[in-house]
Image (tube, rainbow, N blue to C red; front, side, top):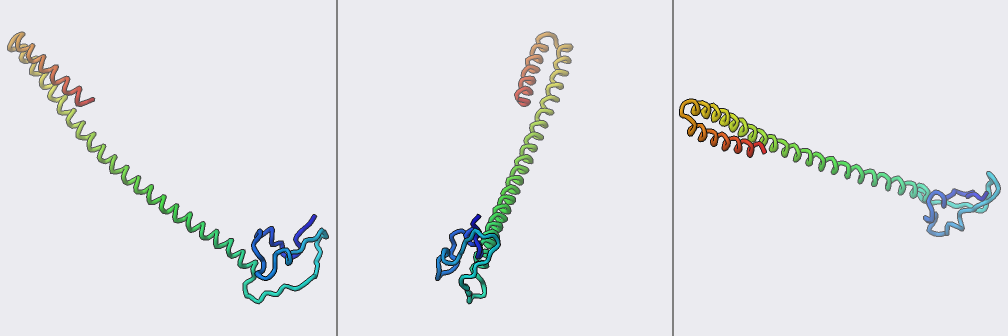
Length: 151
């Protein structure tokens, strides 16, 4: 099996240049001999930070930048969700107020219907058939109004 015997750069960093002065092919050596060391030249770096460290830092900083972007997006999503929740709560409160108003109107209409029925029975007993027919018509009218309110 052929393995990188110097620093295995290509597997770790792809085609990124090891040096500005030499090609990667001139620096990286491969061999089929297991665990062997091939002394062929010395590569001296004058920088405090090696190319290997620079490439590792690039990988790590890219990950940190992506993590920061993801955190910002998550925060924005939470803020948007909180706003939607607040808007939904306001709509619920408004809808509940409408329901309460409709319920009050319904209660009032039902009381009026009951009163009309009582009056119709009283009128029928006191005034005869003509008055009873008039009161029955009023009852029908009140009933239809109640039905419209409840619908």
